[in-house]
Length: 241
Ligand SMILES: [Cu+2]
Ligand SMILES: [Zn+2]
Image (cartoon, protein in one colour):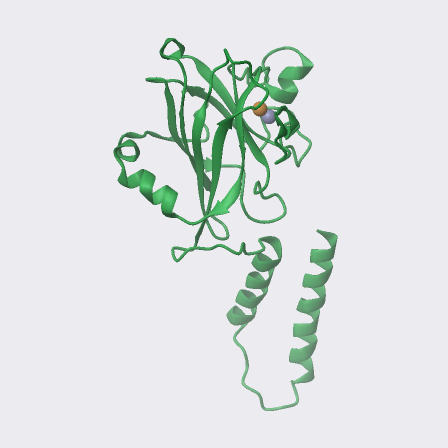
């Protein structure tokens, strides 16, 4: 970040010096608003490096194909599905669709925690995904990928969250990190022990995936299907539904 500040300062000073050096010549004056826009655009480009994949609608999309952990017992729940992401470039808030299945019918109404974990390394199943992604060294549940609890209905989890803290742009991008679906509910930091402030005591890692950029086809397909029409949208602030 210091390097970015330094670079922006140099460029801004250069622009000002350039303007001063030209003062003696009869050049066309650039309106102040144009200069402000250029400086602002420069900052945006420095802070939010444009991902290689921006669709025509100026949004970027990502996908995570959820599969059961290779470390599960045969008797464990086998969760599969997708988590889809969409974010308008460069300042939009991230939104996500969770579409998971494989829960037993008797698990209906139970709550399951879902988080972003630090590594996209699944060589030891979901166990090698590391701790929660925590770029700002804060306690759980304030990590950008603390998505809260998801209620199982009809053996599925289907939920659309908006206004998320995580981002797919810039230095804190979640691309290449993982999503983990847990066996238990998230205690949201209220468990009165250290683990509660690290991971919400959410239990075994049932299923996981690595987040990667995608085109918009999966997102649009979901909305054109019947599942998309029925899905309920929640703002990030609603956690326990
Ligand atoms: Cu987790
Ligand atoms: Zn967390």
